[in-house]
Each structure stands twice: as structure tokens, then as C-alpha cells.
Image 1: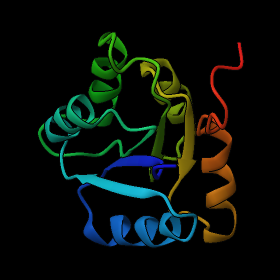
Image 2: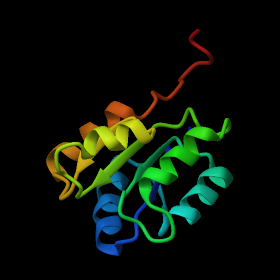
Image 3: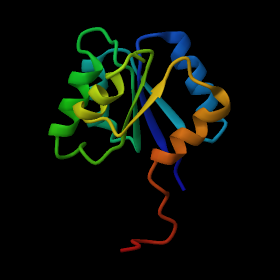
Length: 131
């Protein structure tokens, strides 16, 4: 079985490094985009299983990225999780209304992060279509 692919759209190298290390312990392949436009381009090229999305990004913010991902029929079924330090009242709702499926606050908690990710990642299909 091929590795599950997660695209992390994040401009901060330290944040990417931490998430990458955590996800690799679960044998995920982690792909990186450093701004909103690059994130959309990589999502279109790579069709990841899950997208982690920072909100505060250069070029295009995470809200606009989420809206563009949702408007693309090839990408709109991919779960998108906001991973952000925006933790004020209403920020979660704003991320969800932009098209994110979930919301994880930074700084991430390494003890609970993987369980949060697993909640949103579609189950691997082990024997054909189950429908």
C-alpha cells in the first residue's frame, strides 16, 4: 500500500518541521507548500489525502485557499484542516465557513495531534469499494 499523503501549507519552517516529524512516525508522506498559491498548485498536482492549512500565509491567506480548494471539483472532497494560531472567538467558525473540515490550534500538542489528524483522514480502503 502506498503511503498516505498529507499536504501542509505553512510558511513557517519550524512549524512544518514539527508536524513533519510527528506525521512521519505514522508513516505519512508529508508534502510542503510555503504560500497559499503554491498550496493550491501542489494540491492540484498531487491530490493529497489530507490538507493541513495555516491561515496566516503570504500571497493568499488560508481562508481564500480553503474557498478555492472547495470550488475545484477535483479537490473539494479532500479534507482540509486549519492549523492556526488564530484562536480568538469566531476564528474557528470563520475557518469552517471558508470550507475547512476541522480546526487545530497552534501551538499543536504533540500528544493529541496525531489522533486529531486520524479523525479527519479517510480510512485506507483495504479491499476494494465498500459501498
